[in-house]
Length: 395
Image (cartoon, rainbow, N blue to C red; front, side):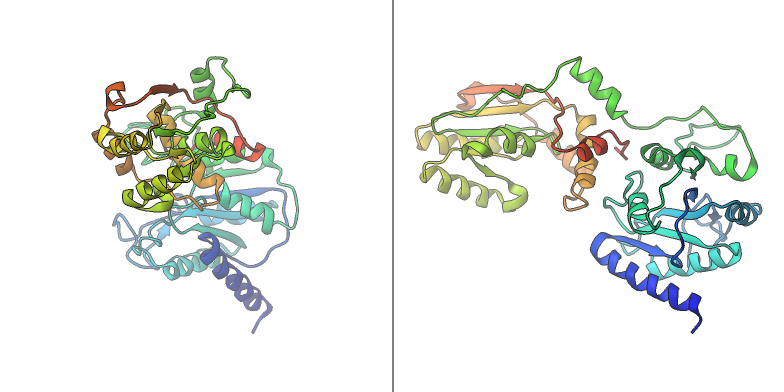
């Protein structure tokens, strides 16, 4: 066995462990650290589908995106760049694509380039998926031998650039802006394949396709900041019902303002069924605790059983309505996946559609003692959480 083969097998073994633990796969020989990186998306950036189908039929169904690609990669390697591919391959998790096919494709691509390349493959809908920065972070923390990246002289190239219809004559709009967002989140110069391999000028005809978190929050808060002394708990027993779309901040609100005061937090994500939530709420009330119903609670019917429970215990029931705008909820949906390193899964869009369909504004005649509106003003537990919040997402 050659030293190269042995190294590759060792790297592959480590990577196989990572795919089970963290849903990312690393392919390539172990390489020395490098300060400059030339990084790329793979599909429709370095390669295209040879058969002309929308998706490759097998590991051999590919050609170079342009004949200049392998030469350019070899030149970049010669000029001292570390070549890296960061690719989303969500079809692996969905069993539409085989990981082995992607690996074999990468092996052939590296062979034809005749230059060492690291390949990072995000295998599903998790925190490694671009435009989240986790694949890049993993490279920096585990694969670059503690060498600091010179971001000013490094770049990322991809076709998902948010270009609009007819960004150049006859060209359709890009399917997303994930690659441009990925480069922006990391802090690298962004290039399209046309810029990188054909020396075309950058286009300004693109759209991000989602909110700019920093600008959005500044506009939304209008100078307001979190009030550290604000309290919402009561010294007497009560039931608190939260209402708000998925990822509107309900659990964070519960944790900050009620949990420290011995309120029992009732959450369907943890308890799984409405019946178990109701049972847990009753048990907590029977023991003398106050409770917070940390669910979406869009309809009067979903609130009525908890209101009745409060009435049976002769205690008041208040409702807190989280007025987080829906576009911000979609952003936060991705943010918490990244903040929890994938422990929390992204809520599918259908969850928002169901909430909208069932929504009924809370009213006092439901038996609510008070209805309090809560505006979203960000407060971060750590600097890392704040940094992640300001990343562009797929929302």
